[in-house]
Image (cartoon, rainbow, N blue to C red; front, side, top):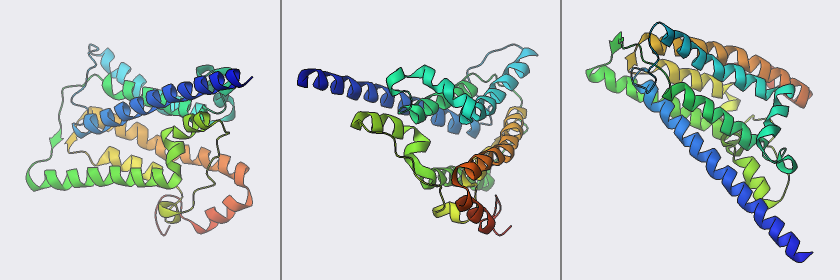
Amino acid sequence: MGVFRTRWTGRRFWLAAAYGVLCHTLFALAVGAMIVMMFFGLSESFGRVPQPWAWLANLALVLQFPLAHSFLLNGRGRRYLAWFAPEAHAKTLGTTVFAIIASVQLALLFLLWTPSGIIWWQAEGAVFWIVCAAYGASWLLLSWASVDAGAEVQSGALGWMSLAQGKRPVYPGMPTAGLFRVIRQPIYVSFALTLWTVPIWTPDQLLLAVVLTAYCLIAPRLKERRFAKRYGREFADYRARTPYILPGK
């Protein structure tokens, strides 16, 4: 019995480690690709779809992220996450699997984009450094908001770390501290800011910014419906005292 338990525990640990390495490697790749490709206004990437089909391919790439991301967050979509983990550990690895899928989606979006080759505007001189500072600040704000929301959940670490320790995932409560004291949706706001503070503007970047900004306006409404069901009065009180996306509004 002791030998069997030791073997099972060892397998569980290495399974958790494998999911952890995969999750954080893909996460770093996706975020890195997003930061770099948007810095150049999507004027550089690896997609090579011929025109006019390139625009259709690019539109499909940008739409697949918000559509699948939102679907996997609802009750029906969460069941599909279990397909990507051993049945016995599917619930535990839920956040890790979700982060893996989201990272793959973002990596596909930014690495397979086919640039139009058109550059409308490129910051130069002092303006370049001002815009770069704003771009960097937007990413720092997004990182801050993600930590306030629960870094282990946002990064996917909660799932594989819980499995490695042989315990159920303990999700953080409703975020109300840090940036969440100022507005209810700091992650979506800061994510939108990263889309509009780039130093190079192309039709590619405009398409991306418009579609994903629309997502940043719509998705929080769906999120707040889930929060209202989950937290009830606690969320109602928080919503009553905290602005939605603009401080003081």
